[in-house]
Image (tube, rainbow, N blue to C red):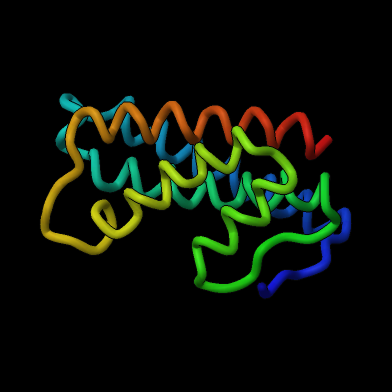
Length: 130
């Protein structure tokens, strides 16, 4: 598993990015007339916010975070720090390809699940990151 050691600067920087992504996601959601108009962009931003938040949780608990493209490894590392958070990251990562790279739009249920998952991760990261 590829990991990267964390410093306070990395932890704070990843928390800032998580906050930026979730703020952008919320703004896009709030400005749309209908959620399905922005569902894929919203979920993609939630995925990025969730990844950054997961890094913060791992940094605070383990002193390192996952580095690389292997989502299974990132979930495995996060499981060591916080099992519930790992389940939320798994929810988001399952939507990553569909929301960002496929022609198929996310469903209303997936939109809601992504929002719930990212909000849990962000709250955990805020607690861990301060």
